[in-house]
Image 1 (tube, helix red, strand yellow):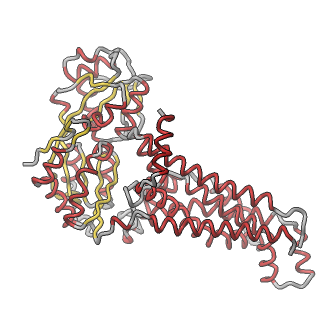
Image 2: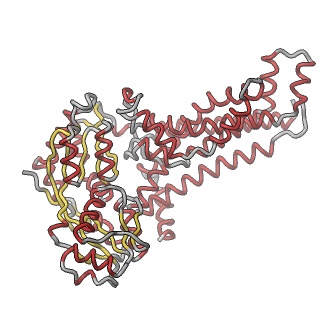
Amino acid sequence: MNRPNLRTSLAIAASAALLLSLLIVSVIAGGRGERDADIRLTLATTTSTENSGLLDALLPAFEQEHNVVVDAIAVGTGQALEIGRTGDADVVMVHAPVLEEEFVAEGYGVERVYFMYNDFVVIGPPADPAGVRAADGAVDAFRRIAGSESVFISRGDNSGTHIKELMIWREAGVRAEGDWYREVGQGMGGVITLANDQEAYTLSDRGTFLSYVAAIDATIVNEGDDILFNPYGAIAVNPERHPHTKIEPAEAFIDYLVSDEGQQRIAGYTVNGEQLFFPNAQ
Amino acid sequence: MLLPSFGEALGLLASGDRELLAITANSLNFAICSTVIAALIGIPLGIVTTLREFPGKRVVISVSYTLMGLPTVVVGLLVFSLLSRSGPLGGFGLMFSPAAVIIGQAILALPIVVSLVYGGLARLDPELYETLITLGASRLQRTVKIVREARISVAAAVLTAFGRVVGEVGAAMMLGGNIRWYTRTITTAIALETAKGAFTLSVALGIVLMVVAFGVNFGLNYLVKLRPRGRIL
């Protein structure tokens, strides 16, 4: 053995030791320890509940009380329901009444429970080149955006917000296509950041918008129309379809959402002093 | 927007933020486990491919090289369709768990290990093998000698695979679901935090990822420099 051979052996031994120590460090520092519980409940929900910070305010109390860990997967409403359909979630929490009814009617969900709402707002650049502030309702606002071919950012991801947006275009009788109409396929937060950056218009739920408002120039240019009402529903995945789903903690979670405690936590969650979601359990 | 975040990010790193640590630990954990699995399968495969002659050998090698560039989202989709409760392996309940991410990343890493091990062994002096036969070495002795001769390539193959999986986002996002404290990795957290407009954590995580990547590259360069040239035995 000559010297280079010794050095290569040392180098390889050192690399192996480095990888091994990284592994040990990662196991020790691993975040699993503080979230150990017997039951893991998989919650498929929308980006609006996670990006707005609501989940962080809502989940810990439930987790402690029931010794359950809630694994929240934040995607668009369409995908959240799809994860429920394939049986990869135990409970879904979304905002697209039509799709929710379909989900329950097909037998994938047990029952839809409404537990909170907020509303959608049309946001755009403060200069408002399309004159949306003067519009008579959201449908007229969308017509003005299309008429002036001002840039509009669409979620384009079959989310609850995207479905509401398509509904408004339909009401407006506008075919949303062309250079000015950009489908970006991102979550609500990503779309707001993008719209702000491109001085474009978009549709957002009020909750997510308010949690971003401090960091952006874009403002609300239209709000308050009935069509902009945005109810959130929770549905336990039907164990008759997917026997492995955890119906008991799923129903406990829904019970928690509509309980006094859950409703108070929803009402009490504020960002910059503004309430983002409004409890409405019956 | 990024510059002020940079200072805050350094502060966050210095303070040893708990969530930052947990996310980093997840990333390293998944990447190391998947790399080890890929190495255990891929190194023997690479050796066999080099030393044995078998029909279709060229095809196997071409396929392996092609799969090195396998798009991460395609692997995500493939493993998703297998592991989903509605898929053939749904009974194991692995979807949206660390195991799902590790499986996906191991699939990404495997062709890299096989191809680079093959490449390293094939680049050895062809006379080496002949010489060993002339010297009367047994098949096992020949294999051991060849692998020892190419050990730097083998180590480089493993490090390259690690570098690929630690920085990938497609499989981690689709198979892990970016679940906080559970399957959130550096890359999925950066995607989320950037969408949330929370650049501080994004930048801090980006720094960690770059440090890991630099570390791996530094190790690779060191190994390559050490590569013995022109020596047979």
